[in-house]
Image 1 (cartoon, rainbow, N blue to C red):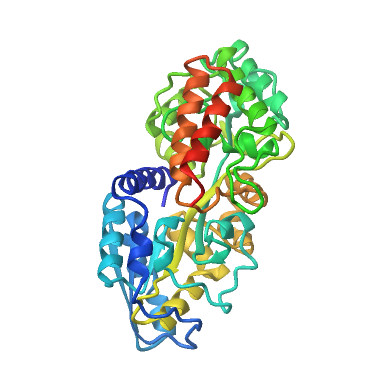
Image 2: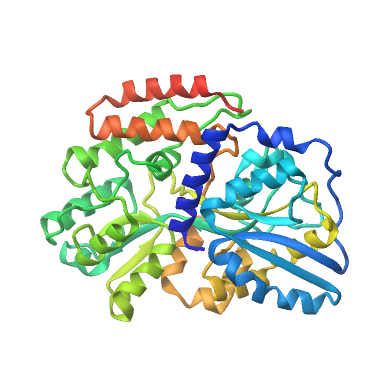
Length: 421
């Protein structure tokens, strides 16, 4: 699934969470069967699975190989629209009528309905950041299926015109290159950066993390947002707008970002791998030689944001051992490489990236490198509300001229009020 669809889906789910409250998972967990801790040697019977969007459409054909390898099993995949997923999961959990397993984009709101991952499911070869997306309250409840991570895109043809024949390696170089793209290559804006709209805080986390900031303290008992590391990261973000290098009123629609990138109006941005497909569709093979992807320039480190989708088996599953067998199969390197060829979803297993289909695409190398150090937000329900408060803080800084110190002090106070549960 392309990342822009995941973002839209999460926005809908988060909105639903805010309206319905976040206590339903706890209420729905009681009375269900204890989770299975085993993986079937051979899957049998019927396995029911829910998946959203493009994945739900592609899985029925893809799992036929699993069915062939496990005679006697049938995988019944239900494809669901993203915008109705939250309600369907909530209703099914409350009624005790859940599927055996499901695709889940790292949503801790339903954590009490998930069975813990058996030891037989090996996640040791997966990127640590992706494993953290399925780790809730110190327990692995979700198995990473595919991943998404942010990297830097820039127009190599315009960069050359601006005097740059190599990618920026530091924050200072990134800002200088963005300025040079304006002054020397005719770009209207040097780079596209978040200015306070929905998702801005999450989109800016790579700056904070690369500057040594942490969202929470070590035991996750408190938010840690009003810190020197966050302050200098947000000062750095704000400086792009203060210097007129980034547009504070940029159209946030994905199509607008692609258009501005391809016309050269804004020839640099931070985005996930989905953008490659959008660029290829709009520009064709000729445009492929006009841009590149590289790891994010480093502050104290180069630490990106990792997301994607995971696989969960429910406590109320009717065929849990066979469901775990399917999860195990979907978690194998060769299976994930084959799934990439079908769906374009990037593997969560590092060894799967050695497949020729991934190695041969030069625009993927940056994402493979970035995944080695990428991080995910803590899997706590309240992060959604804290993130929304962070969006407002960035808007106040960028568009309202509020001092970073005042904005972070207010954000910390709001986060303390929201809590960590």
